[in-house]
Image (cartoon, rainbow, N blue to C red; front, side, top):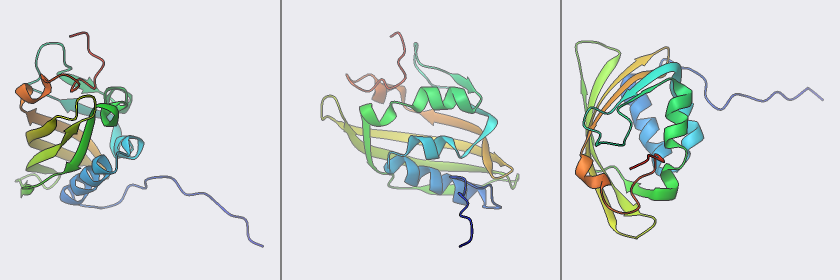
Length: 151
């Protein structure tokens, strides 16, 4: 009987930035944060230029991204990303995505509806840069803070 070998959860592939971004959305809907984080380069950077006071504006490295997102599904229950439009750029490694994330806030059951514009750059089959322009007003509702911030 041949020896069995285990395969890693994610293998870098030549997927396009569009494919990688779509996969990331599917993983968020599945609430599989470890697999979502595994899409990131070790030195990947997430930036949130419109983050309100008390929220992170820049996360450097895969571990920082993982720490920030660890409790996301405990606070925000995403159901869909409607109105997804992905635009190619002059850089073949970078796309701009427009979408909405809809669902509910777990703590209160209130609706969650966030509009996003995300600029994603992929290097070596992993997310190297993720600049997320989201609406800071949507996270001011009770139960929306998944970052563990001191607000």
